[in-house]
Length: 329
Image (cartoon, rainbow, N blue to C red; front, side, top):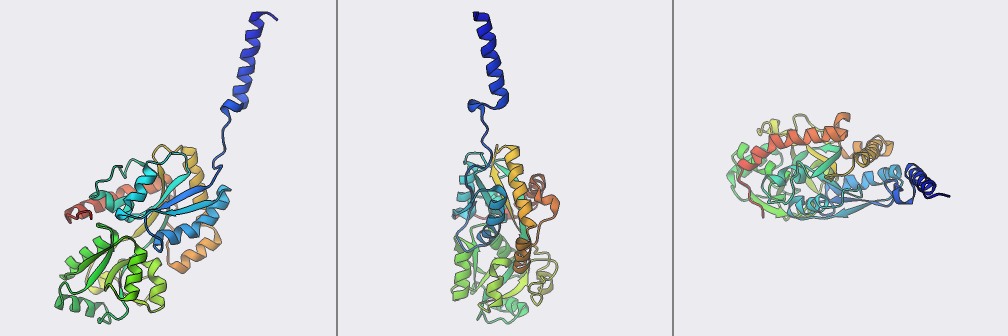
């Protein structure tokens, strides 16, 4: 065979290898190993509840296990930073919330840009905050609570999870609207704060509803008011903030899933498909109902929808939070 023919044959072989995805160009199907969800909080909080609920159906859809890792600290920014600097390959994602993806970046000196260093995947759930207290707090209802707080400035302690967290912002708003004064006590996560409420070591907290509803139902803590415009079907006897004289204190507690910046669109789409499928799973739907979680509108379950909602929330809350002049611990 002539040298020219040999070159033509070699070129033909290379073309065939390229077209058929030979060893050098083989594409590994995503995912080929477990996917890790980072929860930027301690165990026992609402993020862990949601992650455990979704991990089985999402893992089934992906045909790979979903591993949950809790990375608490600095109002969620330590866990978020880990995901922001992770490889953008879809194997490390962030289940984050109002605190981490919104409030913390308003004043913490983080090394990432919360608006550009994450790829939104899907909104997962929406719930509410409510004002709860240790079970033996002297006020029997919200009206008596406000009267007691006005008569006893700085006598009641209020738990919050990280400077500028939803619990902190809510508590400061409540003070301003009711002309009361609270002593704020810092906790590293919702779980430890709830434990101290049950134990009577702290008086009050603006807490996420789904994580604390079982405690209210069991009589271990009591609820005074809901941060929403309408009463909640799971606790219909609890009045809204409007009803108790703290109008317009509405704080939807949203949770979403995010990937590092640069994660390929097809991987984001694969993760989104798994999440959207999990959110219509009958077991998940029933558990959402039992917990009082709201399914996000279908348009917010898309990456584009979550991204747009996130930008709107930043535009609304950053000016409020920054005006409070909150300092990082």
